[in-house]
Length: 171
Image (cartoon, rainbow, N blue to C red; front, side, top):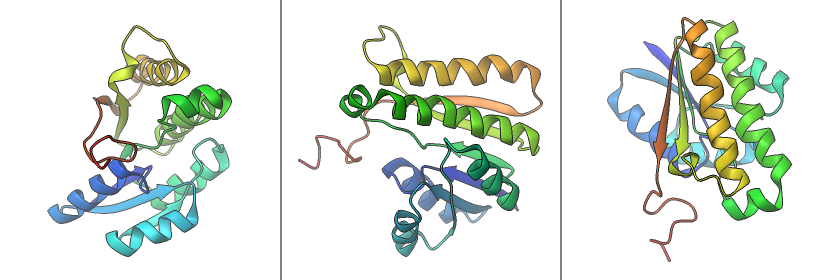
């Protein structure tokens, strides 16, 4: 049975991906998040395996991936709010770029077979904010490097998801 690690598993997209993949019963699903308390709360609904992981911390990523040994990583962790990214640009770069590269490099090192990075429609030009820039840089970095890797790599862009955190629909 293939093991899938979903980063950002306490967020709207990550939690829903974990839930729906769990229903298929083809995979052993793990999820991670930077807050162990949010992992615990998310797991009240999911009832899956979780592992705390701060993706901007290389040692945390090494611990997570070496303990889980996933076949597939679905990377949905991100700093996603344009206004907060503008207010805290370094945190946005740390999470969206450095965090992604940490995951990607460690995944290569530990022989992960597939790496799916969740991105955004805002990663397409024109780049008018730090969030757009970080997501575009994240995509380009891993896609360009994947030419030298045996790992299958894909980036998947989403637009605004109805009822996701921060969506206008619940309002």
